[in-house]
Amino acid sequence: MSINKTSAVLAATLMASLAAGAAHAQGAAKPMEKCYGVAKAGQNDCKAGAGTTCAGTSKVNFQGNAWKLVPAGTCTSIKTSKGLGSLTPKA
Image (cartoon, rainbow, N blue to C red; front, side):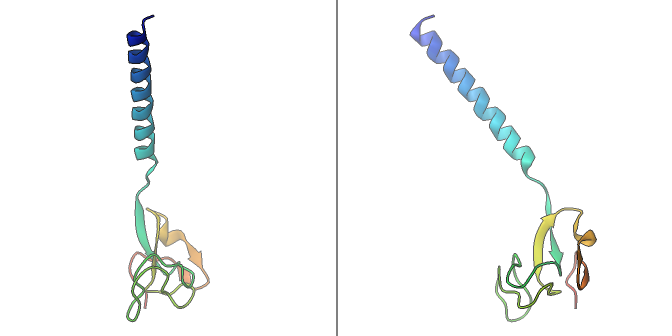
């Protein structure tokens, strides 16, 4: 096999591997949803009501207006000491 043919075969193999890896990575991303009342203090993903700004600002465990991203469809089945997770802010 000539050097040019060998290079072409190696390039084609590399491109096929990269394409397969990219397809696998896209398939790995799972849909997520905001789930209120399930984050521990300081572990929320973003805003936790008045007086807070963003990630890590919740003041108490399972603060009702603090949310955390969870796999879609799992929020309302997450149990905490203050009840189940909610798709909307809790009082």
